[in-house]
Length: 492
Image (cartoon, rainbow, N blue to C red; front, side, top):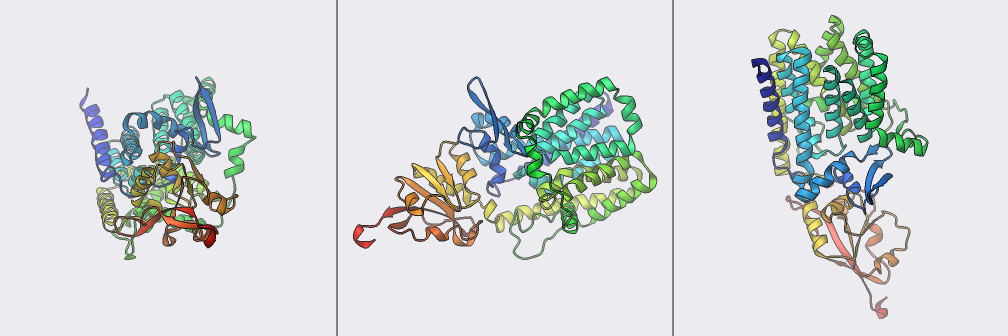
């Protein structure tokens, strides 16, 4: 192995290990959240999917939702079989996938722009707060999509066209939001490398690549053929009403403050430290790429801009951190490319930004230790699932959002559950079920307004608490577990 290859391999390993160490710290914090565990619906028979098939008598989930494939569910079946169910089993595989994304970004930048750009871009990505925490808690989900995007581009750059097309197909099956990246890539190639693309990809190669893409995306294609375009009916809605708000979210994601007050409590109202220098440096990098007409710079600018515009102009998209970070690592790649071309003062500024990023990550962990997380991410979820399973109930009725998925995971899909904020059956009929218990949030932590009110008093029944209110480490009451027992006829 030559010296350059050794440095390249070592650099990729070092940055991947750095990211893994940062993202795997206290892996059970915050608590497991419902959207983070949505993929578990496809792991067990009791879960809900919109498209499945049977292979040798076993159910194989294909589509979780009209816009979400079951790739992650399939990948986790052997994980849970081997390691059981826990926060580590849920989160560490996605941290490993993201570490591979960091390594591939490093290798891609080295191949495209040289060693200096590779180290700068890889370090910025490994220490990016939004990348760390959206991967660690993967509630988009986002980790697999970002890996497949970078891996596919790496294959195309290495002229492994068929492999790259297959990976892009997998990414589309994984989640339809990959269309944003696909459109961005098509626009970027058209803007910067259309002649090279025609020369490198003859018609026959393009045809085989389309077949490979279709193979990767087959479950997604099958679902849309069967439903007459069910994905588009669910998701393809234009909306330009909040471009300013979505742009501000992009800014806060770049400076690392977007998850304050959501993933972590930040009651003091001081979202610091922040890597506030990075959005401005990115603006400078965009101006440089456009002014210099550097083709690789133009490629990343177009990829970044077109992908973001796609989400920003879609109703219900681009307004949350787990959408914005789907355009990562393209901002880091553009910054690294500018650093490779500009004087070292720009590299120093980026190094300061990376150091500030590390400070933001440290503060997130400090806040999780000191103040915990708000209800969707509460660490009280672990005690709640333990208490419910200890009751060995005949069934569980859940009256609020965010509870079903943790119970499904903890019980490995064996627990009989019903969930409704507005049940179709009379409350008294539900309360009369023998051996059933009820789980909800405390009054101050409800996710659906007035979810608790109908269950305060059910005529003919006494509401009995199975356990005291279940609290988080900060002693905030989060969950309540109760049952109903019939009142004596004389007191009804």
